[in-house]
Image (cartoon, rainbow, N blue to C red; front, side, top):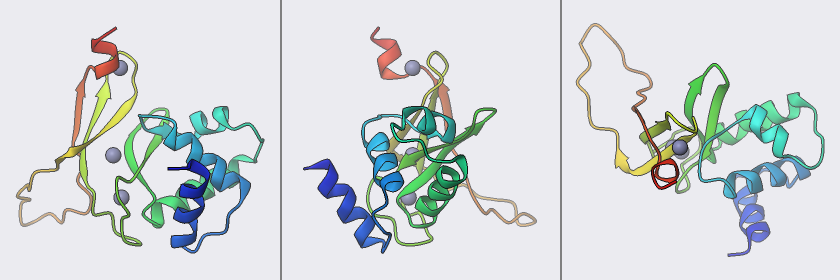
Length: 142
Ligand SMILES: [Zn+2]
Ligand SMILES: [Zn+2]
Ligand SMILES: [Zn+2]
């Protein structure tokens, strides 16, 4: 499918305006097989946008179910595209993430759903992250 068309459709379905920053950011996500931090996105952008715009846009994409938080470390939060359209406000595509020890990229393992975990009664689970540390496909075969 045509990337530009796909992005425009995605923004339209979430009632988001087609701004150059939004379109460019989504293109960068589509062109990467791993999750990206705000810093990485800024370094890939051809047009310079102020940092506030980038952070605000990431936030709104997450709220709209277009992106999800894949991992968080000293480099910040890394975001990845949702595999299918998540309904507004709720992410229904929770899956396992792999952080590569070699290239330090975070990959979505979309086929591996987070197993149901029994949480002790005195705690309230709000968000469960399931991360595997290992070596990614690319690093294994190089
Ligand atoms: Zn999602
Ligand atoms: Zn790797
Ligand atoms: Zn993911």
